[in-house]
Image (cartoon, rainbow, N blue to C red; front, top):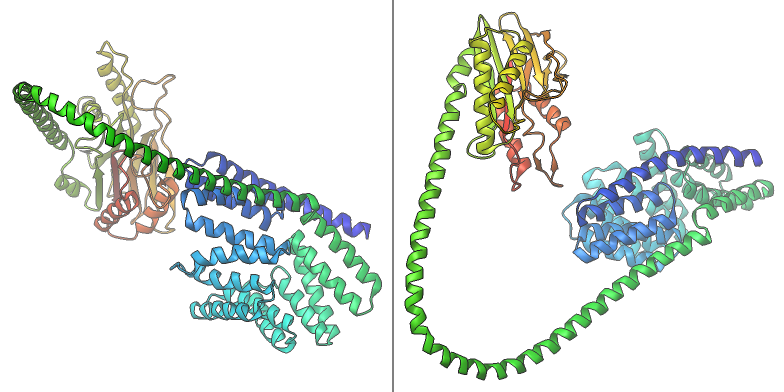
Amino acid sequence: MKKVFAIISFLLACGTAFADAKEDTLRKEVQVAPTDSLRCGALYKLGYHQFFNERNLAGSSINLFAAMQLADQFDFEELSAKCNDALSWIEDRKENHYKAVQYAEKAFTYYSKSDKDIYRFKADYNLGCILLGVNEIEHSEQHLRKALKLARELDKKSWILNSLQAIGGMYRDQGKFHQARTATLEAAEIMMEKSGTYGNGRIPTLLAQVYASLGENDEADLWMARAIECAKRKQDKLLFKEIYFADFELKKDEGKAEEAIASYNLFLLYKDSVFSEEGIGSSNAAEAQYYRDVKALENEKNDAEKRLIESEQFRSEQQQMWMWVVIGVFLIALIFVFQRFRVTSKQKATIHRQKLNVDEKNKEIMDSIAYAKRIQAAILPSDELLKSELPNSFVYYLPKNIVAGDFYWMHALNGNVLIAAADCTGHGVPGAMVSVVCNNALNRTVREYGLKRPSEILDMTRSIVIQEFAKSSENVKDGMDISLCSINLKSGKIEWAGANNPIWIVESQSNELKEIKGDKEPIGQFDHQTPYTNHELQLNDGDLIYLFSDGFVDQFGGENNKKYRAKQFKELLVSLSKSPVDEQKKMLDLEFKTWKGDTEQIDDVCVIGIKV
């Protein structure tokens, strides 16, 4: 027996180490949550994990009630329903069945109105299971059969087997053992078909109990052995508690006293580890504190309403008194109105003239910015030039404001095409001014100095940009990040260099994305400058090159208003790589605007795609 305890303790310790790592991650998520909604969701996930994965009753209750308090305070209905759902199962396991029903009914109120399939299923399945604990067999059966019907209509295997397992348990409690066996065996077959095992052990335990009730002890022993095997695989303290108690009852009824005592001792071990007096006390204390806080909020609200009524009464009395005062003041004020009218008329005329001046200045500023846009557009390669040199290419260019700090650049040189996506410091007018300096530096590098290799071009461009900004008395550290590629379309050979920005290549044969990162040095003033690295690659027909700024991946949006991020952008480009380049540009535009939604665009966007 001591050896068994030692083995089990070791396995649980291993599981605990993994669970602790998961819990640490969830705790950090709670700490860094920037909004009440995200903090509420993080507390729910932490509380759910603590009980349903770690069986930490006290910690789970504290965090779930903290989440529910936030959900109640800010009307997060979905999170409130999920908290009530989790608490209903916890109270059911604590055998507080009537309290479990109360929580389950609160979750049912939200779930039953949802249009999500998972919530429609949970509404009836969860409440049906919890009602079994208070012997509401008729109502339980109605909900469980409704859940099973929905699961079969949607062909959700896991939902079907859960419903069948619950119905089998209901039949067992009613003494309908043949019907219980039929339902539970179907659940067992689905579980074995889905995962190759009998799951967490509850289905085999139920079958062992049913067969024992039918007097088929050999089958009962077989299924109980399978249940214990499942529990050992899961290393779940709550499952051990339930299964070893069931095994104790089975062995006791079979007259196997020594085995029954061994199973009962194991039951006590796991019962105390999950439902110790300290754990139950902490759980109940968390619940009591939650209801005290709810009551305090209600009292505070009632006091506020009472003070508001008293304030309204006082204000009404004051209004009557002040009405007469106002009438007197009004009569006196009439004496000054005419005089003030003449003064005000003159002031209005002055304000009107000032407004006209401001409007005129604003128009001049907007006209200047619009003209700046035309100038910036003039330095960008035209669509016709791009298509003539790179027929299978696209440029997706979306400035944040009228003018941009991002720009794209191209130069045809001795059978090779140089093309770059650049991201200058800032955006709007300041960024556009920097982009003109950097664009001019690139042109000078290839036209005046005749450089061809991307790394040498970046080295010289950096020198020119630093020299230009050094002319100012100000300490200017502006510059750009850039991804510059030289392409020979006939041979498929490319040379590339990058300053902070990478190049991505989607290989046509493997449909995998290859990334080459740029040197961690901008085009501009930088301590410890080193020459840029030149990369040479041989591409195959159909390979795709992507050059881009960081505007797309840094854009906030989506359901949780998070950054798009590089991993998601990679997956998007790989999924689009088989489409024509013009179609890729349309899909990029649709994806960006759908992700952004009503959120403000935070930076300029530039993406270049080229098929070899």
